[in-house]
Length: 396
Image 1: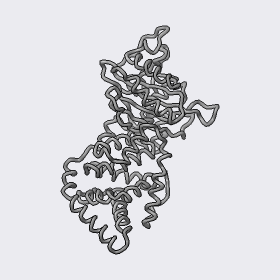
Image 2: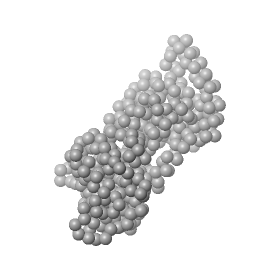
Image 3: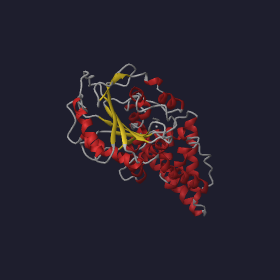
Image 4: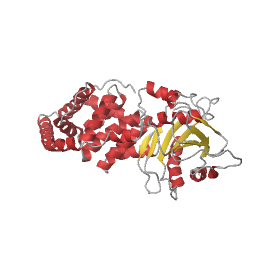
């Protein structure tokens, strides 16, 4: 198998998990991980989802390897919160299966693997003749999940359970109680090493991701106090550009303002409330915002993401949604599905009508490949070029 998930927004009913994280996997590490190595697979899960999951169901969607002699590769990974210890709610298996089937349909996949991570479970005794329904508290959930998938000709090729993803932890099969083992050190997993070398952070918990976009209440109040003045100045600049017969001048200046602040962030500068208000006013222009999508595939993608995080925390309403959506798009393109999903969720919470955030949410939920959305970045390069601004080469 090889490796690279979204925070898909909640499925519409209460019967589904409170969070589903899905991420497309890169195929660069094909051959590093094989279906018949469950310990290695489980140890690689934190790298594949971007953080160490707890009390989670993790499902890997398999695709055929380009080399027919090789084992299948992981095309996508989706993570769900497990329900409370009292046991699965009615319809939980179906809710999980519906989400996974959407991704399988988009990928043309017919096989999946499942891993349950739960510190509340205990390794079962070795006995004969166990089915999934007879192994531990989640056996029934996995059995139902399997039946729902099979209705759409998607098959569960393997299912395992572990208390925590740590070196030496015991894992066991949910399909055969006599198949078990101990986890290798996740830090030495080939997939983990590949992600670290590629500069992709592996966070300890999912909350480290959600904390990135927690609103800075004090700064947001200060930004609000400066926003009217920033918007008034932006309108004056736009009016003057139109009056002088050069309407593009306003967008050009607004885009240059954002680019200069990205450079400042990259140099370690801390933005003031006035800076944030001026940036929010600039990004409100749709042409400017759409041009900024190009940064997701360029040299300054990381610095731009840092600016979007600052701006999302400092703003509210549609301004927070704009910044969070730009972050979500950039994370999506580089394969950081969990961060993309959390950013898109934050955007839609701030502005449920935000059209680009809604597009990204649908794309994440249905398992659209990041490459499909790269055309938005290419459009951004075109917009910037029309304004006379060179955003540099594509590097992602």
